[in-house]
Length: 198
Image (cartoon, rainbow, N blue to C red; front, side, top):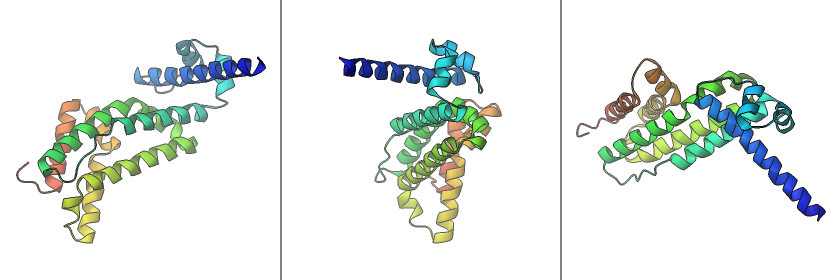
């Protein structure tokens, strides 16, 4: 009987913790890049005390949220077959990357606020960037592999910068729609990979 009580408490605690992280992400998605503990508690339907019981500091809360963002990105990735024609790979990659970048924009903006004091948030961002770069290299391996080493490295770096969240945020914050920003990414990839048929 005691074990059942403990399991029940544990399950409730996990639900509360998840509700708090969800509340933070909902508030960020709505435009509040630095919500207070009170706002998070109100959104989660819990007390402020519960927020501090589950997360002793802001870093822990944002670390959980950044892990959830990372998992969401991984689930959104569209596999790109390097055997596909280049034009199809560019189209698929541009569409997939644009959708991912648009979806993580609110949290990426908010995480910049806490990243200077949060090693875990920084670590998650760097892991996501590394995975994105690896997917990019795999998608366009046939073209990159034909380039001499310095040119190959520079081209991959340029593709990585072009398809980064920072570039996306720049395009979107200067007034481009998500569709137009995706077209810019696509045009940049076409130019960098010298695809006259695309």
